[in-house]
Image (cartoon, rainbow, N blue to C red; front, top):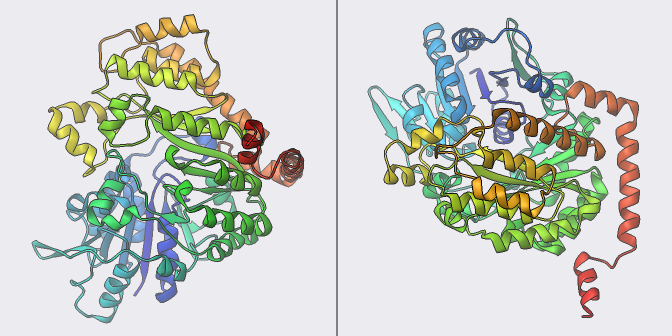
Length: 541
């Protein structure tokens, strides 16, 4: 039975898909993992697109032609890419009606009622055990309609099975490492179909970085997050689960062995800082000894930022951190059910700032363009950002609604039309308030200027003048500033693969990283064992 697992995303990092593909191949070797990128998403091409755009119909037809004839095709996607998957499935049905089609990934969990309209089976939860039951049943000709975590089409009806228990930490530890640079990986190229994935593809889409997720779960219940659907399916998702440190190190060693050019690890856990201190300490000791290259942590919640944890991570090689703020308004944070008020945010930012000599400026996430914001809410957010210790970067997002999240229910209850207003935003509205968000990344205006801005700033849904030119100029300067800091620390997250690889081949990356590591160690050597000890010494305690 020939199986194709197809990931339709904006890149090839795809942590969950890679873990799933590796597991499926361990018990069903006749499996090929395929990567489909609907748009030209190489880092350079995001900024400088070239060539004619492809219609979704032509693109879907080419992908379906390459997949026709397989016994089972399993798609994985986020909801944003669901229309592309639907188009591919429609053409695959016409070309290869005998192919059994499965749809999983976050879209299958978030919107199974939409996915089952197109697929034969939809995975509505964690897929490792359930997909094995489904695949082996189909392969052996046995009844497959009992597979847990699945909705399955039977004639005109849909069988909706119950949820399988979440994998325990011990079970996660027994899974094979996520696939990486395996010989049977394929990537779709226009007019060529699926071709073997090579180093050039990893460089094109990942640069010199490797992205992974170690821990699963989040103790928070923010209404805008897809985790609300996961938690509704199983409250155990709020508990953090992870494999052993040795298992993680084996994964990372495999990566740097296959691709020595990888010079940056990126951990995209939902709540990395919520891990216990002793777990972080074990991780840091192993990482420093066995991997020893700079790394980034993106899943940081203000409530869990502690001096001791951050001290351990920075000594192990942490050079970049990303923390969610979302809003400076306690009213909006209450609406999001996010218990990280201004006080918590400022305390966390102060702790992070103490490590500034060793790290890139931190990234803080902000959600703008919420149609229930008032002028006071907007002012509170701008004032909070104004007061943050500098320097920092902002990741700015226009509010969008994921299907079946609690946020969708909140807006359904509020008023008809608000949800459509949110989904119409693609980039930040060019308002004074949003332009100021970019400005605050660059400089701290004088208080008199900030006072005038706050007096005029309005939420994006209210009538007001727009400033598209100022918005574009400030956004360009914001991008250039971020790129400069990445270059200083050899982060390469925003750099095109070819340029990053040239710098790696020249030896500049390794030389720069070694020099910075030596400088950082010397700086730490001049202080007590931890930053917390430094603070205590200054207080005379």
